[in-house]
Length: 463
Image (cartoon, rainbow, N blue to C red; front, side):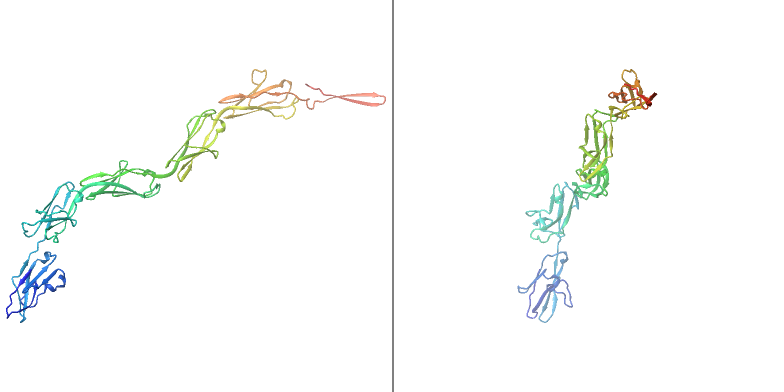
């Protein structure tokens, strides 16, 4: 803005400045010397009798009447009225505050005063110019908007790009996308740990979250925290993100809880009695994560490895106490003992004579039968050669006063529920004279030389 004066010899001007206040008395503030406006106002009087003021970066606050104030050589002062009216128009962008992704939207650049017909417009988003040229209309139309179209929009009139409108935010709403679940901590999860599942999604407006485990409701909220985790928490988890425009599920994540072996048990594939010659399978089972390896022990000694311990053509040597050890990574646990009891019929049947010396007439003689069997033999039967029927029963066979009729070969038969076996024969015979069987014959012979007493002892030798 500028004002021009014509001075006469009588009214020679000595000073001129611009002010926003018209006064008749006193001195109004000089805008050209206002420290608050320094840099925003430039005053110039290079041309004779012309005084100009330039305002830069004007705003609506600069809208006002500006006056020229003069002082002459006689220190007389006056103000030029009616002054110069500065009208400042502030551009405004009008549009919907929020739109849904896929919709179309129109932004309008408006001014509070009339713009010349030849005015063209420039549009900005987030301070970056959107249009390469100038638009002759004050409308910006966005077709099928996406989230990338959201931001702060401004408009400006060409050749006044520095006078941009106040930013207006365009909010583009859309349903949930990119729904994912993360697990913390990210390493191995061991029973007793604390674990956090975090659901995240890209959506506008923000979503609500719902959790599912194996298809069943498992809680709500962005974070699903599990303290003192157990194997029961293992399974497939997913979260559902939902806002007013739609919903979307995350991919499934697997929560795998590690735990040491438990419920270690040895099972036998046979429910009945085990007979010598059978085939038997011992199976070790346990509950653990990761799955366990197995080692077998018989009576404390290593007896193989693997979940299954198979024994074909089993014998009594396989009888004993069996247990397995379940080994899972850093842990191990033993099963209880299982007793393998192999049944078999009598064998190694032997007859023993209780006398270590010779048998003579009248002795007491006992024959004892022994055998190896499982279960132990219940019945013992005694036989003597050349006799059709048994001569006795029980584990021992006794003869109280041995005579010649007892001579002969004896056998015993041991029997349990699985079978029987006879011993080899044992010969029982008399080997000596009858003990203490002395007959004394006394003869008295008289002779001339004296008395001769002859004692004849007759010992009957039995063959």
